[in-house]
Image 1 (cartoon, rainbow, N blue to C red):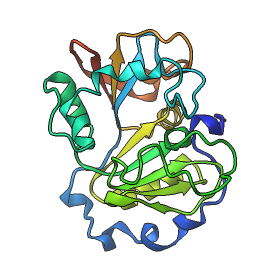
Image 2: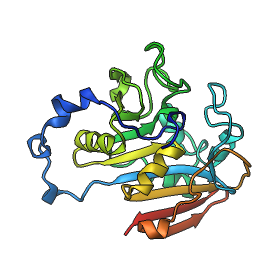
Image 3: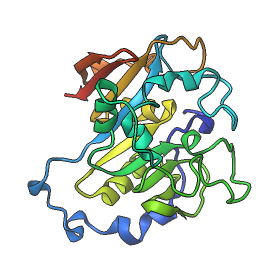
Length: 251
């Protein structure tokens, strides 16, 4: 089982997921499967180094992506899509922005590993930490955080509410799909969370951006995973000046 520090999915008790909105059948929420394409669980804009690492080593509050991890996303930071997340009407267009923009469309919920939410390990010492992003995170939909340790939901500005799931990856996906309705769920990472969902065959579509940098150590995204055996195929690969974009889909 992955370490809780890597943001995997865990067993336990998820009392909040057993009542209210998330137990209402989807049909009662106005969702009719025959009217819409089947919603997907998607990984988008997840960057790995040329040597396969999705995050560097020694992640902490000063290095949330680990040593050398920030360089992975050099393709993403300048894009118009990224800049718009922070209220700026500027940024690059072209291949990188096209893939970045595709990653934001038709999303009704997110799933994050605990490392993606913050640097705190073990039981929550208090409820002061509310994420890396300030009072108005860039999600604007419900976000389901995988953790060993229960915590009440946190409602933020802009439509983001963080829910903390201790019942494992499938419980988080059920709750996220109920929240998303006819829209897709995006799996944001980190590496361990993505690996768990891939091993379970639950990811429908994955966009990986391969950045031309070497990290040398950290969290390897695909090591030991037999993706063809799990049913994944490469359906698209497009190079830009800053990255190579690869799409995989579950067949």
